[in-house]
Length: 356
Ligand SMILES: [Zn+2]
Image 1 (cartoon, protein in one colour):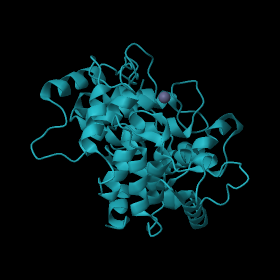
Image 2 (cartoon, rainbow, N blue to C red):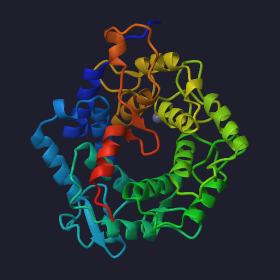
Image 3 (spheres, rainbow, N blue to C red):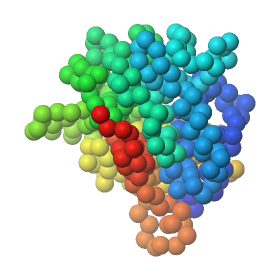
Image 4 (cartoon, rainbow, N blue to C red):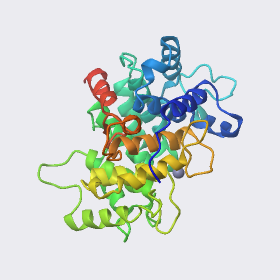
């Protein structure tokens, strides 16, 4: 099979349609609307289409909507997923239990605002630090909302990313958090979502990115040499004969694991082990004929798999011999592998988040 073009125009159309309204088949995603907006805007950002394919009016209204989700209260300040259909949801301050800030949504809100080139003048730094502190539990992990709710490595990663973006780790007990990550490591060299869980690509990326984001004393490595080699061995063996990556040993390939496993290999300095050409062919088969990327061929696309496939391609595009239109369609700018966003967007964020 020769590599076809990456259907950039179709993928832009798919995420733009999702930004203007969720299809009925994905309405359950409304409870994480901010994350969905990030996957859509992030896809446009990686395809270098934010300015060209959205209007200034749209960008202003998205920024206003995201800031409306910043909510303040007794546990500090963060972003909620969306204004839920509750009687007093239009007044976000102070928040009620069902309407409070959410760690994952706060991380995606900050990235979405950076993609929209917001000036961050409305950011409540001190409130964010207080919110992160309220989410950390005694075992070092983080709950998704202050005081209760799910806890897993995902929430820890989001807390670490926010600390890195603010350049302020005062809200986190880093030592305890690192110990929690260690308890999620498995005999395979990957990480599970929580202690005693099976290793999976998502938590493995999240654990490795968190270990590399955490501030450490000089000379202290995030992993021992033996641990690093074992992780690389497990991750690279998740690249399937089809070219795609599976998330767990023995499972079929799924496009989102291109990012989770591939970005983890990038963090470990082993991205050159990936067969990038067969990977690009796998992604080309996941492209839906009317735009968007699905988890595997013959499935329906969604912004999550579209974004993560494009993010993977931004880290390890296929190495094509000629420079024709097919090669150009597979070219991307750089991606920050730790915070998971376009490098230019991360530069904007660092330049505009007000300093302490
Ligand atoms: Zn997936």
